[in-house]
Length: 251
Length: 251
Image (cartoon, rainbow over all chains, first blue to last red; front, side):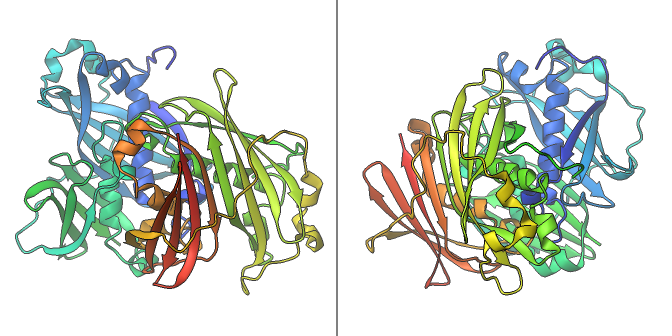
């Protein structure tokens, strides 16, 4: 990872690779989500509080909520920049924001917000971030850049949601910890919609709240409900345990 | 894409991103395949015979076969280089090779071979590459670098293959043309194996031969057969049409 960076805002350039674009020739939302998590990972690693460092102390960051709001998605071959910074640190959560801009023109394509918890990898219990000085995150708080999108939603879903799809967790869903990759839930939820939806409309915002982890072989059932322009999806594993909730707004 | 490149060998650097690694903390084979296709895409685009240029003439490259042979997979965060060049051009096919090296040490991690056809996007029929001078590929033939792995296999599968899995094509499987992304077949085939297989063994070589395209809503059935260290998988759509055949060697 080389020398530690002093700057509070990290800046990472990516490209909308041809095989990461959908049939509208724009970047898949799930691949954008993946780039945001990469930016978060690089930003924390370059500042000494990344997952590879914390692992040695049996600690890790866990993504609790993510919201992405885009006015435009990068087109095939377009380079874009993800800037990320820590907005605030509380006892059990930290808020990390993102801004996505087009490299060529500098115009803002969208913003994202995320909430992370610090956990003990053995007990899987949350740790008090303010009293874990070795993670050093508090010196990197940068509240000033605007992140002019709504705060993260808890994603409330009623009891009327209907079964919309089911999948079994496979090898390619798993991350380095053997849990389902946070972004794979989003990919599976977005696969509930038909191509016609993506042809005629675009996703303006997604919110996802993570509740529990799932593993190889778990059966994930997705229950959906529509509320105006918003689609709500609850993901449940093995019949009864809520895993995550997702809200998708199309325009 | 900027100025055209004169050099016959293209050289592209990638990184084994944390969310592209499996639970052994090594790059997923499917993500490596994706990087190879990106390298092929950049190499041809920078030399004037890429898909974006050919599209204007209603022509495109179609991947017909791919083989990847690795002695080691890049580890999480490791940078690696993909070199690619055109080994030969025949009437209906062109051979493109790849070498994958570790950036830090320069050691070779593996090689890959691929065969591509040039087709007319309207008729979907193959075109005579040697008589399509505007594609200009023939000036870039570079037979000299060694590619010391076996030639591409046609992947012969007998009739005893058993149904091993079924999936329905979803939105995230589709590429910019609305067909299933070549690499997604590989991902679905590799998902037939349990995590224990990946924990105890590693893929030393994969061969994949593409026969037909599939689209949204197609039902893909995967039929598997084991022959020694090799697993053979035939992917069939909608009950009767062969889509691709894959051979995987574990070590």
